[in-house]
Image (cartoon, rainbow over all chains, first blue to last red):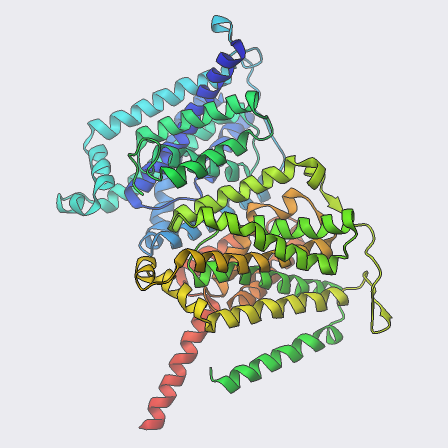
Length: 288
Length: 327
C-alpha cells in the first residue's frame, strides 16, 4: 500500500510537468491546427537554459523560470513570425514535415554546441527528500509541482479573464466566427505560439533538476506530449492537464507493477488504444 | 517523357551503374555512392506510401530495423548467408507491416503519422528489452562474412565492389517497382486516395486494402534497405537501426527529391547523403543540421521537390516548343 501511494504521488508530481508541456502543444493545435513536432526541442532548450543559468551564474533553476519563461515567449513569437507563418497556410502535413525539419535542426545544433553528454543539475537542498506523511517526496519534484500549478493557474486566469485570452479561446472554437467578430486571428496565432513555447520552455526549466539533460531529449518528450494531448483530446486545455497527470501516474505505477523497462511502452500502448477507440480523447472534448 | 526516351534513359542509367566502380577508384567515393543507393531504396520505400498514397509515416525506422535484425539474426543464429538474409529481411518487414497497417490505417492525416511514431518507439523498446532475441542494447556484430564464389571468383568482402553491385541491384528493384506502381491500377487508386479519400471510397476503391498492400510493398523495400545496412556495416543495435532519425531521413529524401515521383528519391539521396557524408567526415556530428535545414528550405521554397520542379519545368519547355512549332 505504501509503495502504491508513493508511486501515485511521484506520478502526479511528474504528471503536473507533463501537463504543462501538453497544454503548450494543445493550445497551439487549437488555434492553428498544427502539430508542432519541434515542441520537445522547446522543452530541451528550457532544460539547458536552467542548467547553464545555474552553472554559469549560480542562479537557482526554479528562480530562473521567471526569466526563461518570458524569453521563451518572445522566442516562440519570433519563430512563428519569421519561419512558420508562411508554412501554416500550406496545410497540416507540410507543417508537420516542416516542424520535423525544425526539430532536427534545433536538436542537432544543440548536439553540436553542447555535445551529447548526459548532464545533471544538483540542488544543494535537493539531496534529502522531504517526508510528509511518511512518503518520500524529492524536493525538486515538489517545487516543480508547486510552480507548475501556479503557472497553469495563471494561464487559466489569462485564458478566462482577459480579452486576449477570450480571443484565443474563440479562435480555437471557431476561426471564421472569430474573424467575423473582429478578432485579429493573426495576432492571436502569434501570441498563442509564444504561449505554447513559453509553457514548454518553463516545463523544461522545472523538469531539469529531475531528469538527465541531453540535446536529443526532446525526441522522447515530444512523443510523450502527443500521448498526453491525444489522451485528453486535441485542443482541450483541461484534457491536457488530465492527460498529463494520467500519463505520469501510468508511467510511475507501471514502473513498479508491470516493468521498469517497459514503462514508456505503456504510454504508447495507451496512446494507440485511445487514438483508435476514442480519437476525440478520453473525455470526448477534443477535435478530431 | 515518351516511351523511347524513357527506355533510353533507363538504358543509360544501367550502363552508368555497371561501369561506375571501374572508373571510380577512391574507396570513400564508392562508399558514398553505396550509401546514396541505399538511401534511394529507403527514400523510395517511404515515397511509395507517403508520396503516392499521401500517408505520412514517421515509423519506417521500425521496418528498416526489422530488415536489419532479421538479416543479422538469421546469419548469426541460423547460418543463413546475409545475401539471402536481405531478402528474408524484406519479407519479414512486409509481413510485420500488415498488422501495423490494419491498426494505423484506421486513422487519417496527422493522426496516422502520430500512430506510426508510437509504433516505431514501441519497436525500439522491444528491441532494447527482448534480450534473448535481439541481444538488447548491445546488439550484434558480424566478425567474418561467409565465403562466396561467383563465376569461379572468390568474392573479397573487404573490398567495396561487391557491396556496390548489391546496392545497385537493390536500387534497380526499388526504382523498377516504383515505376511499375506509378503506371499500375493500384498506383491510380493511391493517387485517388491521396487527393480525396472519401471520394476514392465513394467510387468503389477498397482504400484499406490498397493502403495495406502499398504499405507491404513499402515495408519490403525498407526491409531490403535494412538488411543491406546490416550486411554492409556488419553491426546492428537499437540506436543504429531503430532511431526515429532514420524515419525522418527517409521522409526528407523523398520530400527533397519530389513526392510521388519515380526519380525523386534518387535525386534526394544524391543531395542529402552526399552533403551528410561530407559533413560527417569533417565534423563527426552535425550532418543532421543540414538535413533539417534542407527540409525547411525545400518545403518553404520548393514544395514539389527538386525532381518534381524539374519535371514541371521540362513540361513547360516542351509545351512552349509545341506552340512555336504550330505557329
